[in-house]
Length: 112
Image (cartoon, rainbow, N blue to C red; front, side):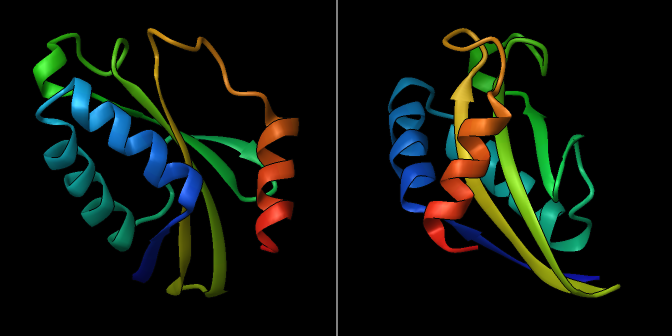
């Protein structure tokens, strides 16, 4: 499988803030991006191609349960190729759950 992983401006802002708080976040995120490019079916499906992925932040030291959450949107061109958009990222300590209606609005605003 070969999937291209792209970020959105909102994701980049939120990721930058997390990278300032946790020094290992960039490395942890890059590992996840490598995994997503090979297999985009990670995490829990929220419907309509939207997925929520748990990401352990190594420097936080709390495992996946206390780490970050990454919201992705997958567009498949064929069975083995497509794009994965990184829509949002948040620290589990800051937000407990993702609002699917807001996420769908963000995707719509991006024209995806």
